[in-house]
Image (tube, rainbow, N blue to C red; front, side):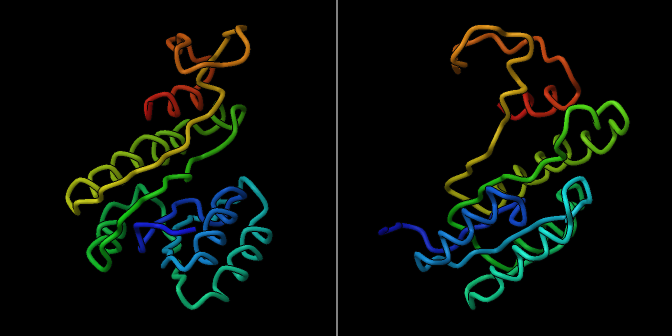
Length: 165
């Protein structure tokens, strides 16, 4: 592929999609900075194994931080100018949002706002972010469409993902 960008920040880099995206970008010659907090919601050993594969690339750097840590995030942006930021980081899981709602607010709302502010203050030209099918709530119309009403989330997780849209 022939990209018009060279430096990419990928949040959630140790997750399934973040890992595969980072690896593809690295193979295509991009410089990739990965961020992940390595929270234990999914198997940390699996995340570490993915990161080990990514760190084999000399054009990969990794920071273990939470996006809600504004100062650490700002330091990363102050260190490198990014052409593209891809936000795949989020606290996952619908059921867990009932047990630990603050984790969702911190990661999916505060973290995303911190990332938006870093992009804004550092002249990032492109931001790509992932939402979730959970935002469609009780909608039964298939297939889902961006034109569907998403005003009735059925979980805190869905509501925090909806705020990104």
